[in-house]
Image (cartoon, rainbow, N blue to C red):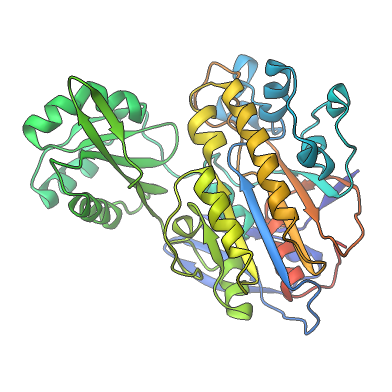
Length: 431
């Protein structure tokens, strides 16, 4: 079965998907060169008191039809969850199985006698151009990019580098695609001698700046990243500028610290804005608030890994916030990019135990949503993201499940589902 959530292209750099399901459209106007349409019609009946949305970063559900356009064909074709399962002989994740998350990714759960799905689940087809976290999260909240953010396989051109160097008063080192953990080993000693920041990028649209905390104060690094963010305008509107502090020395090696900070593009008006205007600020966990430039979110300390995200999420469940939006990135950051299927599988098993704690705190009027933002298959030669479907699962202790919804077009099904559950226009029910 294939289920389409309607699309409305309106030119510029992006469009919104979801308005075709009975949601009245409104043009919000340009944001830079971009424009979206969004859901704005409210309904007085609120189906759920609280929505908990968790993004399992990089946990793709199989190759998207256009994967070859992104270089993800042949041995680099991503099928993250299924390939990881096959590489390690399965994993012990009964709750991910019971919630339908694994079945959405066509994982053969019967091989390990895991529970059959008892939730609503689907496989979401990406519509935005791009396969990075910003693109995936933005699409969830209704922003569909008609063109990808720019990438720099040859490094950044002079029209980017020269104004940046002039603004900070120093030349940069590197300026090439690289692994962050590798390039600080290669250039860390020279950076300590010269004080020049290490600049690198990747297959994603990122401008990453690494500095030793004892050479360049972290607040100075953050300020340099703010300068870069202001300079990186079209056609060089990079999705994210990222500060990457590190410590160590040439003899012991260098290690990145947990003081990373992201400086993303500010998104156009989207479902986070609509939901926060209706119910109050969203409680974001992990990188989520940064992806949306903090707009519509509570100001909370930034958590850096899945263990910290779990603690923050469990604490948030004791509060009165009505929309919790979390990203658990260890699958992607620690294991997908490093081609470590065993570590990836172990992280899924740890997350399953996190799910047990979350489910134990849900009330009958709560709705839990699980999904992913892109793939990052640890079993392929590539160390970059993969263009994949996203698994989707919805569960509420107080509502019956709908089972397998099949294939749904557009990650925005996630945000539309959350919005309807919290009181945005609900002409079509998921539950």
